Image (cartoon, rainbow, N blue to C red; front, side, top):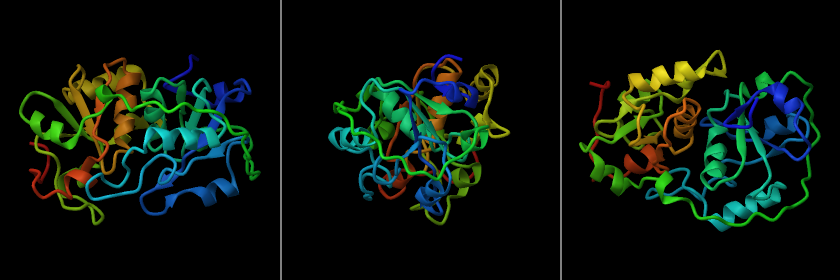
Length: 273
């Protein structure tokens, strides 16, 4: 199997020692899964805290998981033993939906990275409770590429222009919101594209199935932007499109946590018309 955007457990078990494995388990309800990592993780894996290593502090203006400054992200990666040329395999416990955030971040700045298909549940080997102390590495800061991102202002200006907008939240949150959303609804014209639809049975769908999925959403060409609740699971839609061989889309990092908090932004409620 070639490296990226996915690798399976067999590939990882046979991988060279130069690969750094990163555990990014996290959930809306409980936050970073550090306790789960301490209890059992893939041997040799290091832990990345999504809230502090992979995001800047939350703000109403930037959302719950803004991108960290390049210098901060570089320091976080270096502390995990990762440099700019280190191949990285990242996993979670939900098939890769959360892991896709670190995949997007490293991929966007030209690093080698793949998500473990099936997550920790797909790992056939034993697990370890030994906390890894990585040897610090030098990671050079790289600016986040503008062509892989879209701001709230750019997104609003694009409404009605033909840009395909994907909402990676669950269909219910897309239509009605959740208790932790700033308000119900979705970006006008956005299409419901739950990140979990990229998976079947806990594994990523086959290439042809993903193509059919994105064709059904009208998102099988260039000119696509994706968002979710806070810029995490939307990365799974972007990974799914990459796996399907489609052009890279743009990520609205602030996502609904930024858009919904700004009451000057238009909102549509209900199911996709």
